[in-house]
Length: 241
Image 1 (spheres, rainbow, N blue to C red):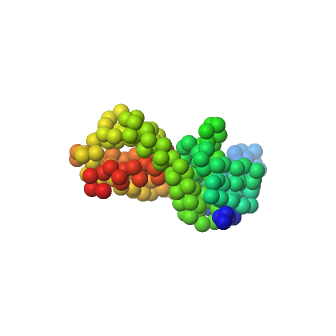
Image 2: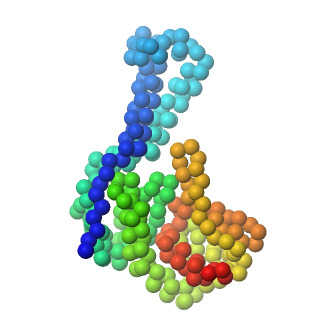
Image 3: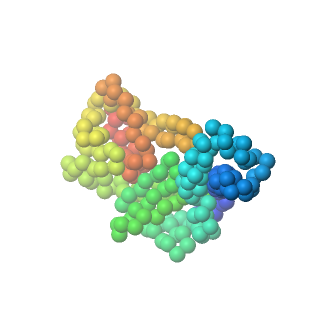
């Protein structure tokens, strides 16, 4: 039976857009003061503009607006043109007029820093699922990753048994171990592998932390392709597994 996920309003992205517009409004208010046009008469006055701290407000207003509207608030504009329902079936998903078969997906990447899921198909096209636009996003991610991972895992295992090194974006996997930045990390040298969340300001970055030979490597999970397949392969090959 198909699983339906319904579009929801992205409140956080909407508030970011409002904050960005407010920053632009403050910038315009400061620029118009020399022309004696006061659109914020109780806050932006000639005395305030002459204050040394006003220069930093003026300089930072537009970059802050670009960041808030163009980056953090981008999901709000996408919401305006997103279909009401996303349907997950046994063999693929349907989003409006777009249909993606799981068997056609060659790359899956979870952009954790933006909470987007990218599905790239054999014809080179990429479908971006903005997870904050859908109800029960955690279940949606799990459902898509399980379906796609099941398809990709067989091909990965076949290539590994044939002696190939399989790329996973920032990492690669071979029969001898992991490859990171051209360096082989042998299975026997790996002490632990875990995930870690790092919060900085309004952003949360997800990392895969590998400890091997006393050295710690942190890999941005947003740069790892087909991570569910990689994690299954790791669990099958780590000495402690």
